[in-house]
Image (cartoon, rainbow, N blue to C red; front, side, top):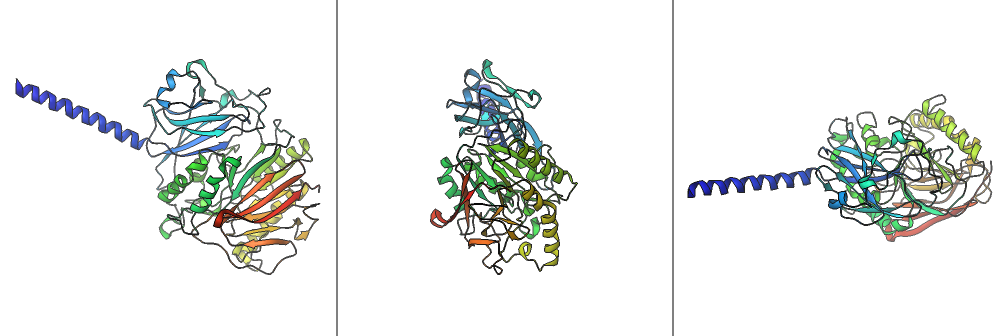
Length: 478
């Protein structure tokens, strides 16, 4: 009898240990990572939440509320809304994580929201994060025309919602300019440690001012996961994921908008990029999009896809510009991409004597620059060159007006996020359109929209988080 009891106790203990170990393994393997916020193509009162996991999540979900909550008790709380997310599988060699993405909808104006992501079936959740909803939401005029886009479920009868009209040049355009500040940088990458070329300084400086920012924009060359010889073609998932983890404190609290760079293509395509960064594109295979924010229209174009006249992207760009200008002929219009039209750093893309680069850049300029002039694009922001420089208002290499009375687009290069390649420290002889400071320091830009007639641009160096360049630009008509 004693032996039987002893064996029963041993079996019970063994089962208990197995259950506990299984629970621990599930917690570790299902832990959500790289939580990212982005704008949607549906309406201003919605945001997209995307995250990664190294293991399959059976019931991917987002919980959110205007009240701080404990996710373990979400089923018993009326104030929590549950939104179902979809699972996206990587199809690039060497990438094994899974991406999950869903919508937070029916947001109210200028409210703090708390949210977490995880598995509603196993009740395993991330920590609770928060964000502040945008100030240009019109809660008296929420659109409800895209119910097919909504996966939202309502917990105990509360909340719920749907998408609305797209923000990009559609009927949701709002002409009222509400002041706001955004941050811009490109060519960041991941470097372990805190060397001067590391992304560590940029990230920490951005964290220190995150409460002043409405969103962040990374103009290409995200993680440099293709930089080593063995990762040049297919990329390196470890470096990619390390970078995503390093910026999680920013991406989980602010919309983080991106455009692809030449170092974001693995296996000759952008599958990893587009599945990781769920931008408000019209189709999953596209890498161009637009959105409105507080009365300003932003257009992201892809310098890494086909952009020649009559291509899908070119047709979309001109249509978006035309539709926006038809509805708002005097509004701010800001465009961004990875590669610049104008740059003067000693770098292949900027070298007019390099035949290969010259032909590629000439095609880029001839295909697209006339659209900036035709539709009165005020500012063009780019990276690619690991340096900081700005232009005077310029079209076809001719200076057109001044910052006080611009008659063409002003171009800003901000490839200064910090990366393994280091910064460019030499410059070609000045062109007529070059202007102001040229810097090889790492840092980031702040774009301040002051009102409907004036914006402010600042370059902040990572060293001491210090202002080293600034200009004001009046709204031009050309």
